[in-house]
Length: 229
Image (cartoon, rainbow, N blue to C red; front, top):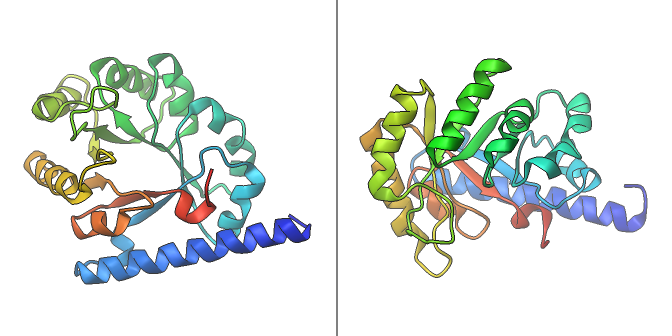
């Protein structure tokens, strides 16, 4: 990024990242929490390696991608330069991509059905590698959206733990666009407590401060850092 336009883009990303970090700290303080208890996942889907570099230069080390194939095209080279970065899969996973996902990512937020849980468990045993795993809950019960239904969540987590011996770190949700996110965040937080899970992956660019008030441990912020797609 040596051109004037490139420098401007880099400055914009750096500035927006700093603003998000400040907002996270303020939201955590308001919730009587430590800012360090909230992991910022910078969602870099659709953005190129050059567009990601300003965030890396500013010290951001946790990133989120939606698609395995897209991530394969840009992150292996960046890992060589930044070996301490952590990559989270936050989009739907197909079982035929499980091997690649386990190889590339450090965390998966979208475990939502037995076939996927089993494929990930098998690949972690083969490689061998341990990932941080979240169960995605379809809190709005939307037919077009991935995630285990709320009524099935406890049984699904139990199956992951007991049958597959998976160490589930927490729960993830994406509230319906037209509904108040706080209702969904409160539900997911309550469900996590009942299951003895500490991780809560919830909150995106428009509602991450609200999510922090309800206990989010991971917020997934893309456009507020990188701009519109």
